[in-house]
Amino acid sequence: MTIKRARWPSGRVETLQHESKLLRGNPLGDPHVRQLHTWLPPQYDDNSDQRFPVLFCLAGFLGSGPGHLNWRNFDENLPERAARLIHEGSMAPVIIVFPDCFTALGGNQYINSSAIGPYADYLTRELVPFVDQHFRTKADRRHRGCFGKSSGGYGAIVHGMKYAKYWGAIANHSGDSYFDWVYLPDWPAALDVLARHRRRKTSAGRVDVPKLAAATAEGTDDGRVRRFLQHIWRKPNPTPAEAHCLLQLAMAASYDPDPEAPNGFLLPCNLDTGEMITTRWRRWQKHDPINMVSRYADKLRSLRGLFIDCGWRDQYRIHYGTRLLSLRLHEHEVEHRYEEFDGTHSGIDYRLDTSLPYLVKALR
Image 1 (cartoon, rainbow, N blue to C red):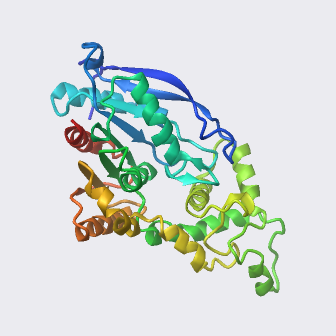
Image 2 (image 1 turned 90 degrees about the vertical axis):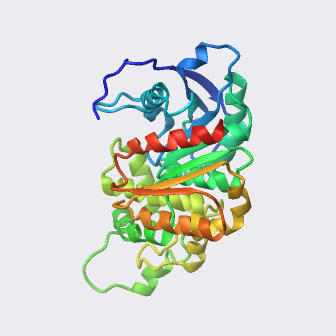
């Protein structure tokens, strides 16, 4: 779609600085003082007494909230899209918040982790009241929602489960689920990347496999993970293979943190043999949305709106996970709207034309 900009009122973005007590001293040394960008609809300045529902936009892995404000060629950024939807009458005015939750591991899953930081608490206990204090929001969970794609979609569905007292409606676009299919297939490639950072390089000849396997039998790092991370932090542009390896490590830090382990987290497989470590993988599975529905069905039923979608050509096979998620929701009588479309994991922002009006209607 070709966008001719400035054909309707655009609203405005206001940027505030927020100092987080919860992120201060986080294990990755990431900033605890961050800018918070908030888009105010055109109607915000028309009536000083009017209050608005609010949506929090959760960015995907390797992204951050401010990225949704960037100019886009032949397309809309998110504020432009919202302004158009309001102008067309597709949805009522809404405030949209773009939190910056980027980390040295490339992002997070919007959950609390001793290896990354308390990002669930950062959103709910700090940013939610901060936004309500500074803007004319309808400061109640019935009028507050969150949405996102990929890791952001995962964050949205998990917040709808574990933190429903803060959110009235959520939209999960292609959010990570069914970890056995989404993450497991990518571990061999990640191990190949990490192998380049072994201290002792492999050489042709006989191999003492028992000795080799024993070094990382419990999911611990023999130093190659740390060296890989240091390599990434020194290098401005990781290769696609390195970025996917970083994602796997970020997920390990999210789902199986351990303050006593090297780097603060454990790995779900042996670094040399690739053998899965059952006790470690079970820690991941506890965070899988398809396994969480039964524990949080009551919270999910309390939502005023629950939207899930995914492209049936998603290159990470997430459509199988979202189908299973919808099935689990049906089994526990959780009302929701599930849609599929002819698309992949990429270039699907146009799906916001469906989810944003859905959310705003649920939150009015």
